[in-house]
Image: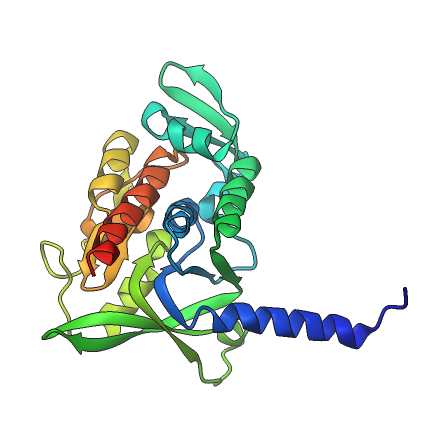
Length: 264
């Protein structure tokens, strides 16, 4: 058959903007397509929610792509292995309680589970601001302000666009990009001991893995924190290239938001 380049362009533009228009009013927006964000999106989409992930980079997977020091193998402990099993990601027992998985297989499979469940992933798209509104007498995050990452990188003065969401998850890792923006631009207190970002501590994997799950929670009305961002926000340790806590954090934040949405 003859191939028409304009039809190719039309197919891309039409299909992309159908996907984008279907994401203008989300149940859950997730910023950061690392392991916790991908896992949370998968679990939420399985329950029928309208979910989209916004990732600044061209690639997804966050730090999981590179394993440890670009040796693309990840480690999960016993407690998190069942999530990889459920996704169909092969693991190998290394020592009692320690399992390895190929980082590329883990990342691509989690992304596949998410998108096949209905998650829409927008890569090369930065979240540069949040929407705040007063709902039932309190300030609440009600949406995100997005722009093209190349526009941001080039420093061009091009206005962004807005997407509404019922809940927002910051899973941007160590940088806490969403929460830092919220704090910088608004006179608000977080649901942390100091009301501010507590900051990340040095590596201590055993404590960090447990705290990643404990710290996965609502940090401001409408805004949840998951993955490494949870420890950075609530002042715990980093964990390095062990990923069970990240996966379990994604499951937990999905369960917490599901409870809130199902009670509305």
